[in-house]
Image 1: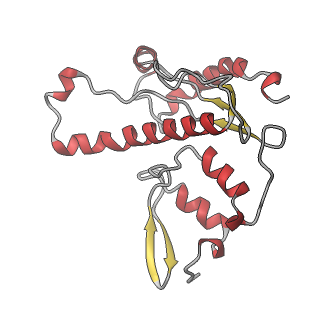
Image 2: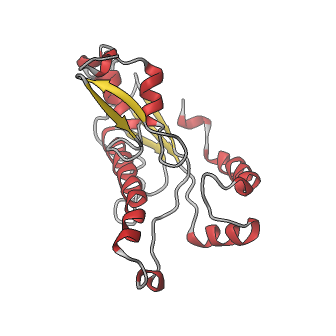
Length: 202
């Protein structure tokens, strides 16, 4: 489809373009304004955590949905895919070239962008659940003021120690395509489910 407006694209193509993570899926080519554009990864955007853009899409007039905001009218539940803090050891840093650093930067950007979107949602909404943003801000649960929605954030954090132990135990890197991690991640998900409480939704 040759269009100059995002609203004219079929939903499947937008989802496919957003999911075109390098290595896992090929780029999605989209004709926009008479020119072909290749989309390679929707994660490296300002909305890697889509909770905030979902709120904006539901409430801004330009999208035509026009849902009513307010604590009594809207709730946002944001579910992450798990997080490990991006870190480069002092020993490894001595041997990294500029090209190697370039390979590490995207994950660091994605982590920081996701955390910033989480923070903005906790400022605009009344946070009912979520682990601390950092040691300075905390979790913002019960933060005062008039809010546009209620908000819960679920995202399992894996410490460097835990990651190292699991990699040693099951073999390979702690990564999306390491199928050896499957059973461990299922168990981690079941354990983390204890964080989900009925009072977060009522």
